[in-house]
Image: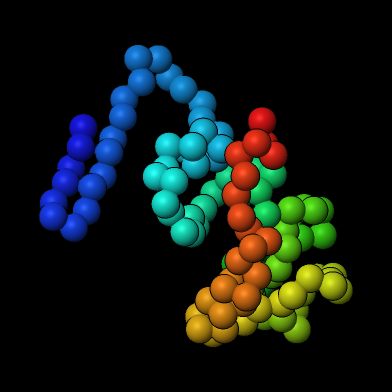
Length: 116
Protein backbone atom coordinates (compact mmCIF):
# COMPACT_ATOMS: atom_id res chain seq x y z
CA UNK A 1 0.00 0.00 0.00
CA UNK A 2 1.24 3.51 -0.79
CA UNK A 3 -0.07 6.65 0.85
CA UNK A 4 1.04 9.80 -0.92
CA UNK A 5 0.40 13.52 -1.15
CA UNK A 6 2.21 16.37 -2.84
CA UNK A 7 4.58 16.47 0.17
CA UNK A 8 4.88 12.91 1.52
CA UNK A 9 5.00 9.27 0.55
CA UNK A 10 4.60 6.25 2.83
CA UNK A 11 4.98 2.68 1.66
CA UNK A 12 3.61 -0.31 3.55
CA UNK A 13 4.57 -3.79 2.48
CA UNK A 14 3.04 -7.11 3.50
CA UNK A 15 4.99 -10.34 3.44
CA UNK A 16 3.57 -13.68 2.31
CA UNK A 17 5.16 -15.30 5.36
CA UNK A 18 6.27 -13.85 8.68
CA UNK A 19 9.63 -12.12 8.29
CA UNK A 20 12.19 -11.21 10.90
CA UNK A 21 13.90 -8.10 9.61
CA UNK A 22 17.12 -6.65 10.94
CA UNK A 23 17.75 -2.94 11.11
CA UNK A 24 20.02 -3.45 8.10
CA UNK A 25 17.14 -4.87 6.05
CA UNK A 26 15.08 -1.81 6.92
CA UNK A 27 17.86 0.64 6.12
CA UNK A 28 18.32 -1.04 2.73
CA UNK A 29 14.73 -0.08 1.87
CA UNK A 30 15.41 3.63 2.24
CA UNK A 31 16.04 6.08 -0.56
CA UNK A 32 19.78 6.60 -1.17
CA UNK A 33 19.43 10.37 -0.80
CA UNK A 34 18.49 10.22 2.89
CA UNK A 35 20.87 12.29 5.01
CA UNK A 36 19.95 11.06 8.49
CA UNK A 37 17.99 8.14 9.90
CA UNK A 38 17.12 8.02 13.58
CA UNK A 39 16.62 4.41 14.66
CA UNK A 40 14.71 3.54 17.80
CA UNK A 41 14.71 0.05 19.20
CA UNK A 42 17.18 -2.49 17.82
CA UNK A 43 19.19 -2.13 21.01
CA UNK A 44 21.14 -5.29 20.24
CA UNK A 45 22.16 -4.12 16.75
CA UNK A 46 25.74 -3.50 15.72
CA UNK A 47 25.03 0.09 14.65
CA UNK A 48 26.75 2.95 16.42
CA UNK A 49 24.32 4.33 18.99
CA UNK A 50 23.65 7.15 21.40
CA UNK A 51 22.15 5.73 24.55
CA UNK A 52 19.29 7.72 26.03
CA UNK A 53 19.48 7.01 29.75
CA UNK A 54 17.16 8.46 32.37
CA UNK A 55 18.03 7.37 35.90
CA UNK A 56 14.46 7.88 37.12
CA UNK A 57 13.24 5.27 34.61
CA UNK A 58 14.87 2.63 36.82
CA UNK A 59 16.45 0.72 33.93
CA UNK A 60 20.14 -0.13 33.89
CA UNK A 61 22.47 1.78 31.61
CA UNK A 62 23.67 -0.21 28.62
CA UNK A 63 26.89 1.69 27.84
CA UNK A 64 29.14 -0.31 30.20
CA UNK A 65 28.41 -3.49 28.19
CA UNK A 66 27.70 -2.21 24.65
CA UNK A 67 30.74 -1.29 22.58
CA UNK A 68 28.51 0.26 19.90
CA UNK A 69 27.33 3.06 22.21
CA UNK A 70 29.43 6.10 21.33
CA UNK A 71 27.71 8.70 23.55
CA UNK A 72 25.18 8.93 26.37
CA UNK A 73 22.32 11.44 26.38
CA UNK A 74 20.96 11.80 29.90
CA UNK A 75 19.10 14.07 32.29
CA UNK A 76 21.19 12.74 35.19
CA UNK A 77 24.89 12.90 34.29
CA UNK A 78 25.84 12.96 37.97
CA UNK A 79 23.98 9.66 38.44
CA UNK A 80 25.71 7.62 35.73
CA UNK A 81 26.45 4.20 37.23
CA UNK A 82 30.01 4.09 35.89
CA UNK A 83 32.61 6.59 34.71
CA UNK A 84 32.96 6.77 30.95
CA UNK A 85 35.22 8.37 28.38
CA UNK A 86 32.26 8.62 26.00
CA UNK A 87 30.68 12.04 25.52
CA UNK A 88 27.83 12.69 27.96
CA UNK A 89 25.18 14.86 26.32
CA UNK A 90 22.44 16.87 28.04
CA UNK A 91 19.10 15.31 27.18
CA UNK A 92 17.40 18.61 28.01
CA UNK A 93 19.48 20.53 25.44
CA UNK A 94 18.15 19.44 22.01
CA UNK A 95 20.19 22.14 20.24
CA UNK A 96 23.35 20.84 21.87
CA UNK A 97 22.46 17.26 20.95
CA UNK A 98 21.82 18.28 17.34
CA UNK A 99 25.10 20.20 17.23
CA UNK A 100 27.01 17.16 18.53
CA UNK A 101 25.36 14.99 15.85
CA UNK A 102 26.27 17.44 13.10
CA UNK A 103 29.86 17.71 14.34
CA UNK A 104 30.18 13.91 14.54
CA UNK A 105 28.00 12.99 11.57
CA UNK A 106 30.80 11.32 9.62
CA UNK A 107 31.10 8.72 12.41
CA UNK A 108 27.55 7.62 11.63
CA UNK A 109 27.91 7.29 7.85
CA UNK A 110 26.21 4.02 6.94
CA UNK A 111 28.01 1.60 4.66
CA UNK A 112 25.86 -1.52 4.18
CA UNK A 113 28.88 -3.54 3.03
CA UNK A 114 30.32 -3.33 6.56
CA UNK A 115 27.31 -5.26 7.87
CA UNK A 116 26.97 -8.09 5.34
